[in-house]
Image (tube, rainbow, N blue to C red; front, top):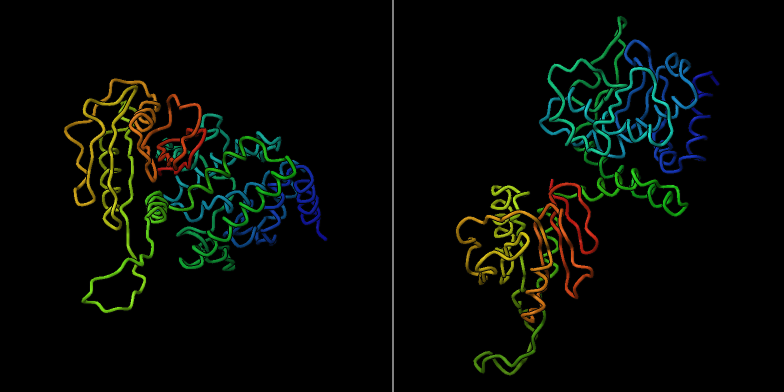
Length: 377
């Protein structure tokens, strides 16, 4: 076994013992010694971890652990599938800025030239990306072989990096790494070794697995009340009584945070999306606008056949208190199938959850004390 292979094996063992969450993820990546002519430090294509043996041999044990965990987190967080139409070089740097402070917080030592800025600690790559200047002269620690440039590096003898995954394989790998992430988090949590920062990271990554529109549509479809009726049909239909499927309209309460922290355009988009989803199932909606108090005239009632069109501009006076909406529902004796609250979750919550489902559609990173939280990306 080469010196580099021995260092990597020892580092993996140390991670499994000291950092079981990171260690479990690292074990999912087979290690492959790469040609130094295309692999400067380390690289990954979400299938394998490639390394430059000479670079590995130049690092301390803690730095090797950092390098392994760095590659595994890129894969587990789906960075290879989240770039979209962004500039690849800036996106890769944003991903490094998102990961590296976490690893430093776990007590690992970054290798030389690793991009670490405390300014971005706790932020997702999507949040960091617009903060990066176009003329920032900074390279990533590693090579990301899942972009358009993957597989194009070569040496003088034609040595090339592996070709990046095709689109269908990329989707399969993203789902596979989501499962690896959830399994590693569960095992580490059971062992009491999933720290706060990593726990928040995992929660955010797993919540972002589906777009919020899909999650909302799935939930509202589940609340639709379909049942079989054995009521006697018309005499013209004969003597035999067969069950027929009947749908009762859903009763929804929808609250909009108009305190000013959520933009008018975003409120309008949410109402439009909800109206489109509502077209697939009969639902009567009571629409609330609230900051620290209910807006005058709120709530407004919309029957299933009426489009959701809030009257006039919804302007708040600042401050956010969620209680007025819940107090109105309790006072009026309303029993909704669900309450949907569109907000940034920066406000005063009621002390206890009500006896009906509550969905918080949250813009930003704030948490909620109870109810189902759906992240708006």
